[in-house]
Length: 328
Image (cartoon, rainbow, N blue to C red; front, side, top):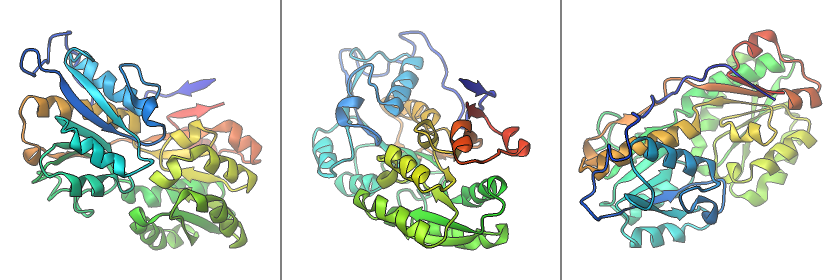
């Protein structure tokens, strides 16, 4: 059973138009939109009604703007299990590419094309990562949305401390694409009463070893980022956290949907839905270099009460009252 407090959209809602309200392509032209996402096979992202949740959210945003799949556009889906698939996607010369902001996806696209517009769905830190010149104006073929993941590290550690106040050591999972997460945890953790423990994970085969390292280090809690390496294996991560008896806070809610304890971050499906507004502008002729980078302004706290009970944790009322959703 789900209890939901009204979720605030972090990025605003797209205007709802009639079926012909936003068609911008020349008569008879069907736009091709590349879709690069994580958390599922390429086949899960294909077609007008894909099972992949983020792809569906994007298509819902397109429908709300008046675009009909097959009439106005089609998608060219691409999973991230092999980076060579990105070069194959670029070779198809789609009109726009909508791409996840995690892992090596954006760097690979950056090398592969300087002309095809790329809409980022939640890049962790697009300016410092070198994808765009500034938040006000990208200055190149990249545009879209940031995730503000680095800025929220302290907030996540604070929430975790409220849940397990007696725990003194927290393992920080990170990979080479988000190395500054560890630096932020080092800077903010001690002031919250945490001794951060670095656990680097370079590929999925190291996930099991990472949990053993965390336990052997004496860590009594865990922070898991929105990492391509980890999110693609969310059920394995959540299962190992349960086996290791480590209360964990995650950056994105798909981990909690898979059985994780709690997450705090931007609504990733809302971000993918919002990506449709960028595609709309680009198909109407907007220059991606002149578009601003949007940032989420509201975030959701999701708690899995079943997982808390299994870990023997009592969720403080002060945390429960702030939750946007509690899974019983």
